[in-house]
Length: 470
Image 1: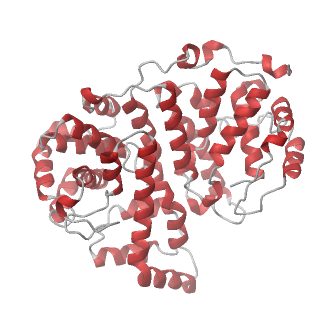
Image 2: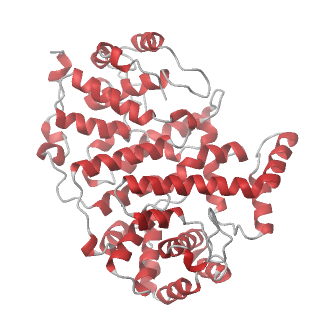
Image 3: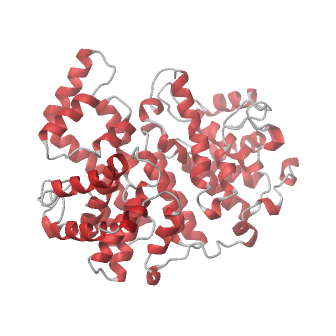
């Protein structure tokens, strides 16, 4: 057996669930809520946006007297409302030519039914820094095709979000609530132009909750309430609005949005009768769904996380890792790039060389990965493993400049798999490399960027890895 197969991480360093072969009594709400911080990144929102929206929306639902089943559907609609938001990032960057995270963030403050607000938004965000001629071309395209483009962007996001929650095992009500999130009470929303009570109630509540949190975050309670009053009857269901103002009279409602203890308050809001405990297959499904959310952000990373996970598991098998450890390795590989949801597509898809500031932004994704995953109790030890995938054996990597044996075995495996897939897939700045060319580059990095034993394991499995890239 290869020497590195004996260099296993001590059992006490592995998550308790790995040692026991079970996920324990982890609630679905905990893991979905913790991973919702990744969805906040892709929407350019302050950390905790989805959780705060859940706090707002659940209080409104309770005030409306919804039953436990509907409240449960509402709960997960609110936590996962942005599940499809990464899928339109590349298209938004293509249309506006700037940082799509800023574009998304600022658009949340716009009343899309106000031509004046829309016009100001487009003038401010289309083609920043571009030559006048190029900027005018963008503005003309957005003016001429604005309605069709807006519907396209919303439909892509909503359809993708609904598909993801169905894959996560949620029912039709949650999927419908997410698909209809951008419908407006007066029928002028998207993607279907639904009106009034034809819009799912969960979507009507989630839209209001989202707007309340956005305006409260930038302007406080008064700004949020003012905006709700301005949009009642156009965006918002009057009955839902009335319920919001009833709960908004209480000081504890607003103080509940504070960051301190927010997660605990959200878990307490989940209807007890609807509490779902996670098992191993459900945890795998969540990791796979969030991998797809990550990869949907850029046209150049479609399928990347799934391939890295497949390569990593094969390398792990070649090195003698047992099935239990390979399962956790697979999850770590699926989620290793979750921090990239916080990196602008203007950087991820830039065809030329990155400047210093852009490179620093890219490097932040590794630490963001660790920060997000460590919020998930069961991923506590997995978080630094996944977050260290850009560390190098010679100590010149990032974010912590770990060296040699300081880098966990699982991380070294993911690093080899990640680099191999990056080399053999299309990128904005070059075409995909042939298998032998990619392996030649990796051989030159042996003992500096990559672990030699892990590389040897990859090479031994090369006939398996030699498949057309998606």
